[in-house]
Amino acid sequence: MTFDLCIIGAGAAGCVAAITAGRNGKSVLLLEAKDKIASKLYRTGNGKCNLTNLRMGEDCFFSDAEEGVLQRLSPMDAAFLMRFFEDLGVVLYARDGYVYPRTEQASTIVQALQTELSRLSVTIKTGVTVGSIKREHPSAGPFLITDKEGETYTSEMVLIATGGLAGEKDAPGDLGYAMARSCGHSVYPLYPVLVPLYTSPEEISLAFGVRCHAQLTLLVDGKEAASESGQLQIIRNGLSGIPVFQISHLAGKALQEGKEVRILVDFLPDVQAEVLAERIETSVKEAGEETLGMILNGLLHDKLIRMILALYDLQPEMKVRNFLEKREDAEAILHDVMLSMKSLSVPVTHTGDFTEAQVTAGGVPLKEVTKEGASLLQEGLFLAGEILNVDGICGGYNLTHAFLSGIQAGNACSLYPDGRS
Ligand SMILES: Cc1cc2nc3c(=O)[nH]c(=O)nc-3n(C[C@H](O)[C@H](O)[C@H](O)COP(=O)(O)OP(=O)(O)OC[C@H]3O[C@@H](n4cnc5c(N)ncnc54)[C@H](O)[C@@H]3O)c2cc1C
Image (tube, rainbow, N blue to C red; front, side, top):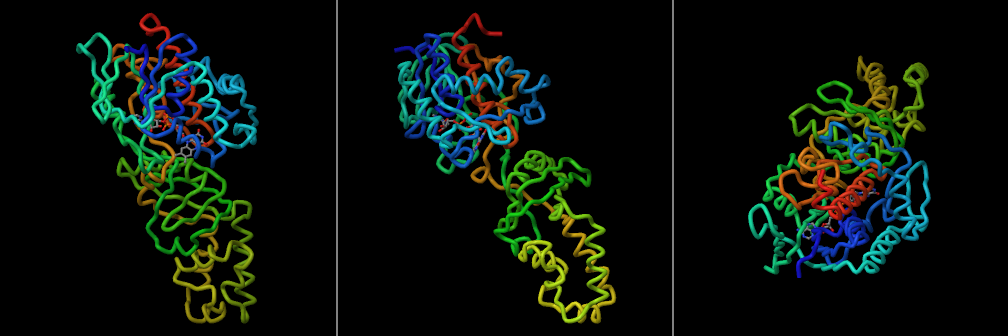
């Protein structure tokens, strides 16, 4: 049987594309390498699926689209996506603009997709890893889609919705990119984003496990590139948490370009530097039997105090008076310790790898596909989701793009060949 549309990858983009094309009367074959559809969705938003956000701006996305990602997706937007899921019976709610299913279970979204795919009689084959696509004749006729076992499927159109490389240990890898390349597409360099950032001073690990509110400033070649605040997590040899994820795209790109990347961490964004300086001066004047740990107590988590002191070769157990007697520059060092609480300069040596990342930056250039995801290089080929050169910051933006580009592609397939723009 020749299907109207074969979708490779039953993730966020592939499932909604199948639903959209199915609703438009197309016969759809959905091929998925894993043993169930939309498996990544279960892990999104810490299992709650942050599917979109009430605050949408072009500044939430990175891509090569001159007109901007949202502009390309319009008239579809977050409200459209919310209606899409509400029409599938999913009750949604927003917290600080982040939109989730009311159940706070990502499985609700997967179940809704599954039910609609069944209602539309979309043919789903799981456990099928597609290895290649080619045409019967180089530029015309149906596509032949061959899986790793050598089984071939035939379809008038193909949508590659194989996602990226991020967050998967047993993923089918970069086959989707290879297929896009085999159809003439290029692929911008891929790198992991929404990912921890690693650093060189081993002392950072002394604060392993600490979570605290902090303000981060990303410096690229000494210039401020971004600033974020939120809950920072200290991990082994590195930093993680939402504010780190938010700056990870720019940090990863700069590292790829061989630039110097640093993060200034302000562990006390609500406390003025002068207040800290006064505290040190008083402690020095009144130095008695107190230890360094005692005079700094209450400012930061004690593991952070130990870590910052270690950077100056000091320990919390040292007596302030002894330290002042031993070192001429002791007072200046204590001031530097205090300043480090406001702006600890952390060199970034590398980002986490794809298994630690949530999203893949880079991919097939948007300039090689129409706004609706139709390939400009291969008639009848479409691309949607993370395989495209689009990534968003944390907050539901990646799923927004995956879902909306999937719906767009599903619509475009339905109009093919007339709908090709
Ligand atoms: C831990 C984690 C949490 C996240 N949380 C959020 C969040 O809360 N909000 C948000 O917006 N984004 C989040 N993301 C990002 C978001 O999940 C992705 O951007 C989105 O799923 C991309 O959709 P997609 O359809 O393009 O790709 P995917 O959802 O990755 O789907 C691609 C599918 O294609 C299949 N496939 C690949 N190659 C082949 C092949 N050769 N043959 C057959 N099948 C193939 C894969 O198995 C996969 O099922 C998170 C990501 C991770 C890893």
